[in-house]
Image 1 (cartoon, rainbow, N blue to C red):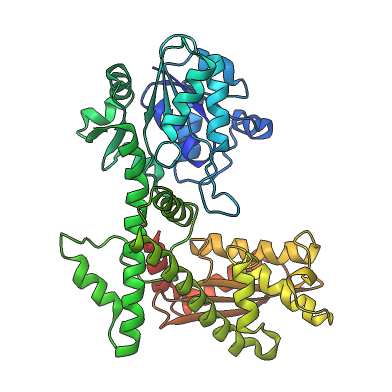
Image 2: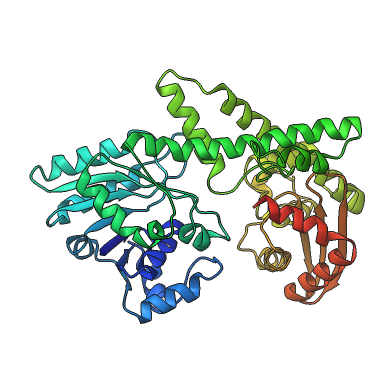
Length: 448
């Protein structure tokens, strides 16, 4: 079948490459000319194990193409997937659906013959109805059906998740659309991957409900970890003890700093807003969000305590650390947040966010490069349990790297000096593993 994939982000690119590998003719569309040019050259803009080879193989086989020309791609397609971003809207937490609706308007103008329009992006209940209204308003006589087909891909295992899914959810009441979707996923259906056909609104809610439930499991074991720490119990053994129950399962029962990433925070907030909009408040999910925020702040205090022991009065107060976390200066760029604070303090500047060194400062770039290199080597961008602090003095780079176990009970630390970011990261990695970080890192990677 001929497929147009609108959006070449994480979901769009992985899905497009996998559909091409099934034998379909896929055209991935994006407005970013630089991204399309890079993909045409064979440069994949995201890291996902196996994705480079999958894109290269299907591009060589001419089953996978990349273009900025949306009308041409849609006109030739039997199925058009909308896989654009749906970030949290500033101010109210609702999902920002502007990219989805913009894509629907452009698709409407290009439809030619019966076409199935599929929302692959994670969208609130009722989004498919609005997409259908937009297209019908623009093209009253067009032949099309709107389907919800949510993705359930995990970063780092996305290709496997696409090709060996637990289930394929298809929301549509249109028989022609269901036949198209069955054909698209035929290789999986033949391998007995279950296709769950529902109405469109049910499919949309399944995705949010699934993510909210997983977030709840993470938050539950984190609260049990807090209690276990107080009473002298081992939360990892507790998780194993309850995870062996088939009704519960072991996945997502690893105590840690709380959930984060690109999905759970925005999806739980969007679900809460949907509940409030329909006068059905979700009290359990409300508690999950509140407890998770508190958990991250508690982990920040642990990091501050450990770093304070190493650097004494050069480290920020817990209050400032909380402010940095809350305002985004800490997180995946945690090391640079500390570095910018220290730089401001060293120069006698009031250590407020406004006074911190800009990220384009040469020393900031060197420190950030060292931190990124370390994170890549040890296996993840864990924001708080994996902290790296790099300071620069001419050609000399001093790095402090910290790894804290998921329950906060074990710490591995490395302090190194090098003349290059890569050298500092390599030395720190070696020292961390020598200090017993390997087991801690495995536990953190299990979180993903």
